Image (cartoon, rainbow, N blue to C red; front, side, top):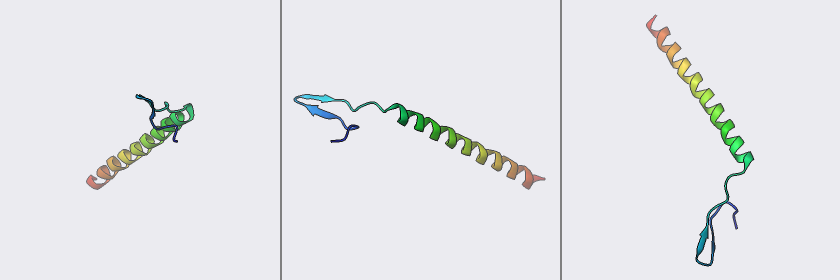
Length: 54
């Protein structure tokens, strides 16, 4: 049995367990790092366009 999967008890389907605090914190960390990397890519593309024009 997986704790993240819904469980059927009789005729009722119990929802999956909410994510733990560690999972939420890790997700926010991955989002921060991802947006940081995207911002770096955007800045490099803008600088590349400016260098190609000049």
